[in-house]
Length: 280
Image (cartoon, rainbow, N blue to C red; front, side, top):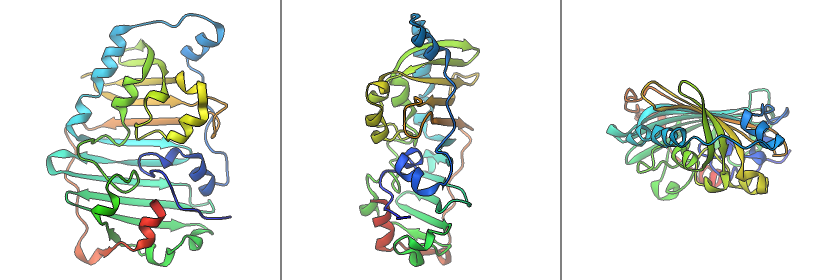
């Protein structure tokens, strides 16, 4: 197999990028989505229910996220990103696992941001790991100190403390086209993903590939007793690549995140050019 540079954001996007998923897995790209009641209603021609109160509740559910004190996870296509954001200390920790240990290539990243510094530790596994350019300089078991001028705006390695939500759930809720309550703190409806291309949990190339289908994608969401978003699941259409993929975002421990722990000096090296090239 050919190991390519990992374009698009591993943390923000490439977890759910078909090209990256294909590079790191030997199995199916993802689980088949289960159609929601909204999708079923659309298929049968029934008019979807409109609940303006439910939509406003979802819009309001992301306000606490903007305070930057929470834990989160994003899953899709056999990959996981999880971590915490702690705005009071201007720090964040994010761990990413792309692929499984049995795949040709599996990549794990441990990212630490403590303004004004950032570090990343890589773990490359699988038969193709040695084919990654500069693997001997990347797979050191130490943290690479990152040049902020090289990672500013980089969706894989950078972090914007003015936009603290890695998943971009505010953009997702603003893209809701129809929603209804399905229970206490539970919602279902459709999203126009073409209006949420900036959301970190989405890959713009996937949205483009969906074409007209991107304008009506089923989702479910949950909120806690305080009305704060705790889960959103987006079910990409069966015709997408990867087919029927489910993207799941969760939030927890609002107000209870902690400051990131900086790596000790003896565990840090300066990032080599190959690292930046890998994520350009």
